[in-house]
Image 1 (cartoon, rainbow, N blue to C red):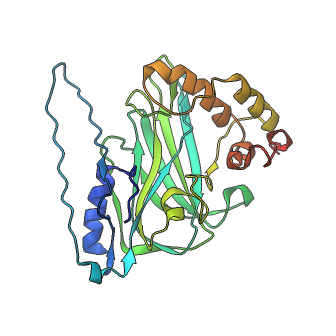
Image 2: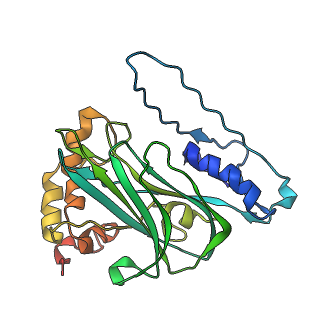
Length: 285
């Protein structure tokens, strides 16, 4: 895979890539070019009252360039909008289109410690246009050590289908939780190794685009229509990224505008903006 300089690799996904090397056709490989950077994102949780030493090791196996006929890619699908009220149950759902025919070698979930359930399914079309579930890609309850689902043989996905993934959470804390980059926050991701690769399939965006996740559908189950969403957003701190306790309240206040909207609104947020779709015209019916 031709990795960008800021590509982030989950160690569990790398483990799956290594296993895929034995399961995929002999002419398929991830390509890493000279000068590119592979970042290992190693999550740790210390359950003791004293410092501990953690160690992560990863073997990467190679084949000759001349042998590679198909380049493999890694789907890195990240839901940036997760909110869980204090002491409450919560869900987060997003979908991405299959931009061209691919072979899916494996699938994997990613959540933090409040995750209690996860399911990724394949739809026969756009979920906002009535796309129906036609198969399960991944299902589990583990957040700390999820098992990679290996497809043997690789599962064929067709252009026009959609991948939808959902995370379920139970918040046992008396504070609101938002999506963020630290263990005090939450995440909801779908990860998978596939071939042949494309930028569009790696990061859920239209072919030729550079805007990650601009093809995604956020499928919230709230009640706010487009006008209410816009009012909420304009009054919010408008802070979506970051992580940790210091910014948690601001991120929650901003992300809730998305997660508390109806799916007809949240599913079209990539289309909102100057010269584009006016949110105030979007209803929930």
